[in-house]
Amino acid sequence: MRRLMMIAAAVICLAGCRREPPLHLYEEAEVMSELPMVELALDVYWDYEMEFGLQYDWRSEWHFPWSDETDGPIGYTEPTLFQLRRYYTGSVPYAPHTTTYANVITGMRFIDKYHWGFWDFLVWNDIVTEDGVQSIIIDEQTSLDYVTAFTNQTMSTARYNAPQYTRSFYQPEELFSAYSQGEEINEQLDGFTFDAERNIWVKQLNMTLTPVTYIYLTQVILHNNKGRIASVDGQSNLSGMARTVVLNTKVTGEEPITVSYTVAKRNNCDFPHADGTIEKVDIIGGRVLTFGICNNNPDKITRIEQVNDNKHHYMDVNVQFNNGMDSTIVFDVTDQVRRRYKGGVITVELDMDTVPVPQRSGGSGFNAVVKDFEEVTHEIEM
Image (cartoon, rainbow, N blue to C red; front, side, top):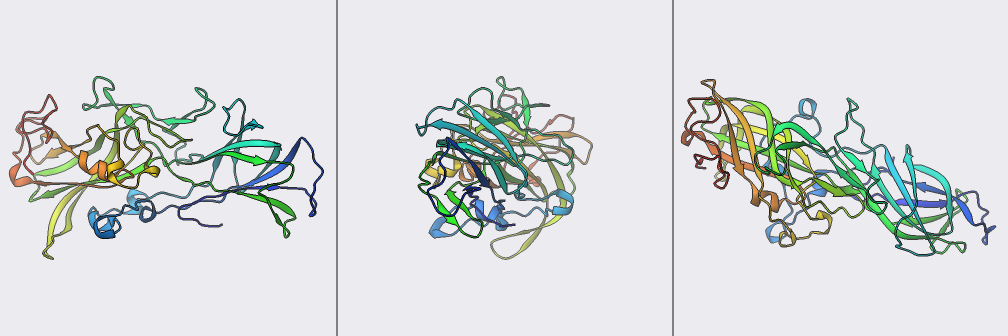
């Protein structure tokens, strides 16, 4: 299997032809499409350029002791199955779609008949989960010109986008897409090259298969915890993220939602300081997939000034203290999310010596670091 880090190409091959053109010219011809697999590492996709030309080193920021064996893969996994949509626009390139040819690519090659003329191609990975349950819903019915992905609401309360959505949403699975328009398959085989070994004509489509779901690694560093926060209930939320994404354009929707995900608490973790000393801290960490910031296409963004984001982003964690009382801690992570518009590490630090232990369940004593949330009664000093 050919392995690529960023680019997946689609190859159209005219099969069953003699070596010497011209071919027997019919109104349509049998065409073979090849779709190589794609492998995408976080190091490659999180290609932010920092100050002085330095690249983003997420490992230097990530202190939670993640284990692929117990926590699952931290980065993207290689897709093995693809959905292919072909749209024939006749003699007019970039015309509105009137007909869809839907196919599933189970290997690297696909053969079917194509009319002479112009075609648009949309590819995304078919989602395969261990339990067979898929959170992402693909909408192909609303418009033939745009395929949209979204998820539905959970049963958990979401405080930070009410009253529009009073419940959080399921996080999407890893989703990649590529789209190419105005590809011509003509009788003269313009743009084709001949593959003598396979005795076929080949046309290269320069399609880039990249994520449309974005990974955030969140961590709450608990300094001087001393057992005060004893555990977490495993649930966390990240708000202000897009509800939908269009697979053709990779532009996210305008509606903000809260995405629910799981976290865990690890004790006695190493936390390095600038002076070279190592502090033992407790960390609450997790991995969340989202459709990203609303109304943006991260593939088109090259610097933070291009990020279009007027939403607030809050991260909350449900914790239990050593006296049996529970509470929800809320952090404003807006600036970090905007800086990491393609995903990345989100870090908040909390000095537990400054946090009063609640005396009743539900967060008496403190609620959040968010000042503009109407239920906030106290602010955590950080």
